[in-house]
Length: 358
Image 1: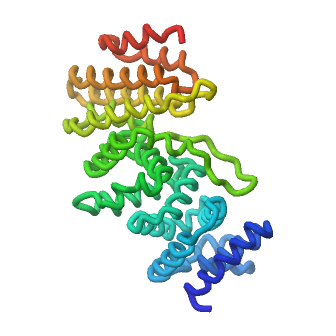
Image 2 (image 1 turned 60 degrees about the vertical axis):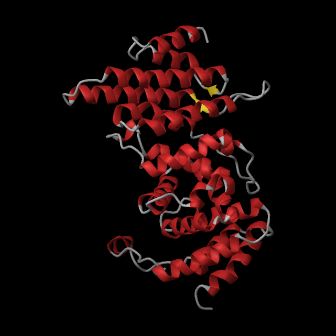
Image 3 (image 1 turned 120 degrees about the vertical axis):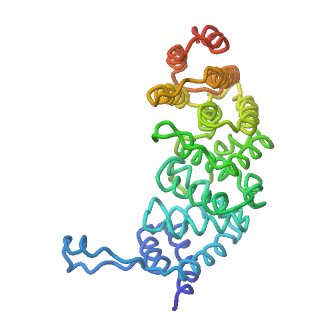
């Protein structure tokens, strides 16, 4: 068969091998040969020769587009979520060589609001880790296609939380790692359009940040990876933005929405907290201290008002999170770390004193 008909015919066979016959290796061979056209290299070539002559991409740009259409059609069919997730993981896993197809596929799924495909992608991000290189690259692609190259946010992007809440939540966790992250050198603020969209998402649906905590339909034998909610990243945005941006109207609105989300994150009395890792809040302290040091080293004066407001926002978030019982990890260590921040802030001192015995 010609491409992409071979891929269209191969996908149901791959599904049958994975789900009904448990022949994973055979399915992976079919995926490589008939879906992505990755032929096995000639074994007579030495490893040195292989390194000098890397394999060329098997799919042209047109063929990638054709494959994206085939995959959109396939994942739109009715069927169990666990089956779709198993096929999606088998197709993409953590493969770097297939990211071009993956990025085009998910960008198309966002444009077409293809919920089953976006739900599978959201589960894939969660299992790999929202801050893993493949997840971050996918997030960057979505930002590039729907934010950087757009003059206004698309209705499809705005409605993403309603179409695929898990994907929207994990996308937020990924993009908060890309911007205003002191661990990555110079603080880069998110594009205004992205900030606007995320603020609208969280304001309209405070529980969205917890969507990644809903049960997942995983393939048989798969183990659910730890959940990474976007709350810590959003708190970091609100706190550090005061040191880098004068456009505070949206950040103030986002901060209010995050506090509301923290209230929503209160776990049942019988369940342990799972929304916010104390260690991640500690990293925000590192970012604050590092940024203040950089400001002084560069010869600029610390704006006392901005520092005060940053610490106030951080203290509010920590206190609401503690009150909501949604922080897990070493809370006493977090309180000790708070004491290393400038102590002139009264609210921060109140939070420290109130929780020293936690």
